[in-house]
Structure formats: C-alpha cells, structure tokens
Image 1 (cartoon, rainbow, N blue to C red):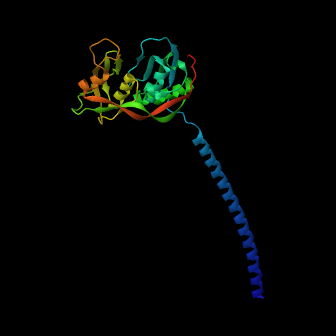
Image 2 (cartoon, helix red, strand yellow; image 1 turned 60 degrees about the vertical axis):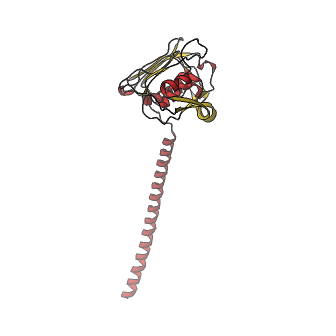
Image 3 (cartoon, rainbow, N blue to C red; image 1 turned 45 degrees about the vertical axis):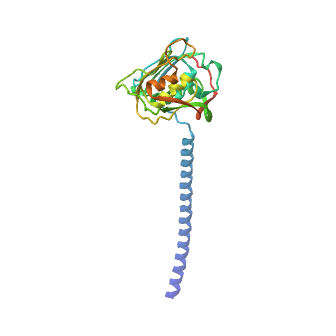
Length: 272
C-alpha cells in the first residue's frame, strides 16, 4: 500500500517536473530569442552608425567671396584664423592637399582664371598649423565648391632633387619666422622649409614634378637667386645652375612616379 502510494507520488512529481521543465525551457528560449534580437538590432544600429559619414575637422565660421585678380596673400599659420586672398581654385586645392599645380589634373577652365577670398575661423580659438588647416580646407572645398576628387599614380617626366658630390651648403632655418616661402622673378626665398617642401616649390618653378631624394631632414633657410624667366635678359643664372653653385643641390631629369589628384566634379561657390 505504502509502495503504491509512493509510486503514485513519484509519477505525479514526474508530471510536475516535466511540465515545469517544459515551461522553464520555453521561457528560457523566449528570453534567449529576445536577447538575440536586441543584440541584432544593436549590431545593425552600430553598423549603420559606422556607415554614416563622419564630419571631419572643419572651420567653425567660414567666408567665401569672389575676388578680382591681384597680389596673392595668405595669413601666417599658427593663429586662430586662416585667410587667403585672390587665390585660384587650383591654388586652394594645392594648399588643401599639399600638392603642386602639376599634380592636379582636370577640372573646368576657370579653376586658374577665377579668384576667391576665403576666411576660416578655428573652433574654440585653436592654433591652426599647416596640418590643422589642410583637412579643414578640404572640407570647405567639398562643402562650398562641391569638389569631388580621386587619386591616381602616374609615371611622368620630372626631376629628382639630390645633393652634389661636394655636399649641401644649407643654412639652419630661422628660429622664429612667420614669413612663408616666396617665389619671385629673381629667385626663391624661404626662412624655414623642409626639403620636401622645397622640392614642391621647385616643381612650381620648373613646371615638372620634383621628388626629394636628398636624404636631408629638418628645416633650412633657403636664399636662392636665379632668373625665373629663362628668356629674361639678366646676369642671374638658371635655377639648375643656381642650385649647384649656391646650395650644393642638383636637379636630375628622371621619370618619376607621382600621385595625381584628378578633379571629378566641382562647382562655383555662392558668396556669403
């Protein structure tokens, strides 16, 4: 009698346990499914957020106005405001991407014949170095000029800048200078420039890409006297002769690989 009662109790407990387990499993499965769904939604949200273009560093306040042709001017770097006057689109792109004119390909005919005055103020009054200005100017060109570009490597006739056998004759850069390099009819004058930057300056002078292969690091003062116009009647030497005689550097002709910036599309900006 007692054994039969115990057997019935065991069977009842089995039924209860079985139902409880089933309910527990169902609830657990639902909870797992819900948690998985939450994670999936969160993952999709994160993915969507990562796909959204993020706004890079940009000027807090900007002004873009059409200008008349005249003497080009640019504010010294290091202040909280960047300004440039009577600059062509080609020059603006060159400054924004650190390129010479010869590295920019395509675009409308007006990119060299129309000029702009641009002012950009930094957020929170931060100091605008060259490295700080470039991404902000790129963003301004994309927003105001609707500039779209891409890059392509190309092998083109150019020059390499090297040190002569007698060695370089360069002066140390000025310790504190807010004056930037100048390209004049009588030469190039730069109180403080790296050899990479000097090569870019020379590219503007000779009209071909110049690659720095001097192996020289640091910054230097450059006072290079030459006749920028080969047809001019003057006692000044050519830039090629001046480099060797005055700085102990040389330009060798060579096919070089350079990265060109191709303009896919651009629009005239509206004044503000």
